[in-house]
Length: 151
Image (cartoon, rainbow, N blue to C red):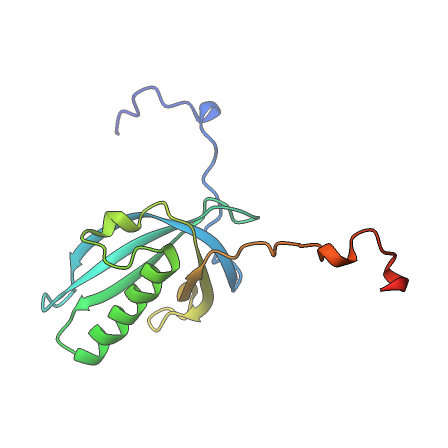
């Protein structure tokens, strides 16, 4: 047996369902970043944690792994391109540390894919873009006070 130190389930929200979220574009921020070694130890990847910040899936977490230090140059080039897209989306073009990318809103394009080992559907981030802004409505000064049918 293990001591649960007075845990009371009445004081804690139950864990949410972690099924993949639907494929779509979501407004998100990077909340954590960390370099980790690859499984075979031949390189490192930058793991980024994204948190959706609005809509039905607010607070859901998704991860991206950028193989910036990889023995396969094509893999590293793709990852550098993804990092470039993230940097441009958040407006930080020459970050010295990945923490400079944290808490800046950007759009992530989320897709669904099947895992090779289990066949289970999982989320994968397939693209990054700048936060979408609402179009600014302007009034043509010449048209002010003129009925639409008289223009």
